[in-house]
Amino acid sequence: MKKSEEIKSELSKAYPVRAELHAHTKPVSGCSDIPPRDAVRTFHNDGYDAMAITNHFSINKRWTNKEDYLEAYKHDFLEALDEGEKLGMTIYLGAELRFSKQSDNDYLLFGITLDDLDKIYDYLDKDLETFVRECKTETMVLLQAHPFRDDMILMDTDLLDGVEAFNMHPNHNSRVAVAYYYAKEHGKIATIGSDYHHVGHDNLAATRFSTLPKDSLELAEELRKNDFIYEISGNLMV
Image 1 (tube, rainbow, N blue to C red):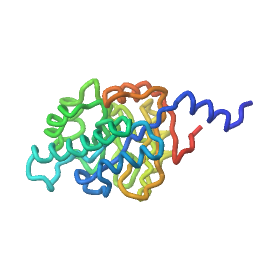
Image 2 (cartoon, rainbow, N blue to C red):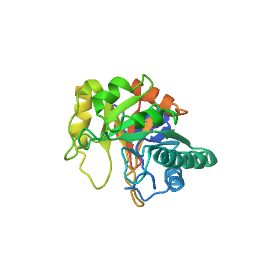
Image 3 (tube, rainbow, N blue to C red):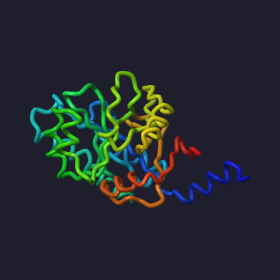
Image 4 (cartoon, one colour):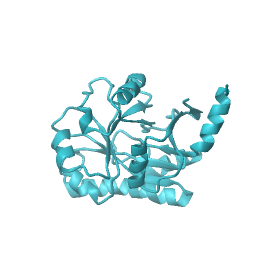
């Protein structure tokens, strides 16, 4: 029988790519105190190969109109992308959606391009069902973020590709074990993310892939395969 360390070593070799799938930057995410370039450098210095910028995407009173908000949203991503290119790190476009007509639930969205943001914005004042029916495309992967936190409402899993099972935000109880088994019970994708917002957030959580997705569209494809493993603070979960 193989020892745990042997198994971890083999898995590390089989899944060498380390990616962060939930990170916020300022100023577009008002809850974050990390500029885009600093966020990228943090994960690069920790040995990550890639990260997704998943800023909050919701009706936001800090911007007076749609155009200004989209410009700000894209600016944070493009700054991160530029820093990633300098460091040789892949940056994915993502979004954490919240729909005005439906509670305080959050939804992580991958498999998108900058051009998609304009149309997605027009559904932020609606609900999840309308978004899925009228806006979501086959390239997109939609996950309910931290579904078992306080005040979250579990949604019909037929509307979702999966859930964020492991959310490592240090200031919330996301009931990760419950979330993981919920995803598996319903045959859904179960992701992991640091939910990175602040300096000193050391509980970084990597998704480890066998190959490096080159952009958000390929990231969504890899997630659909369900062929990845989890790592928390440098420790493989086996």
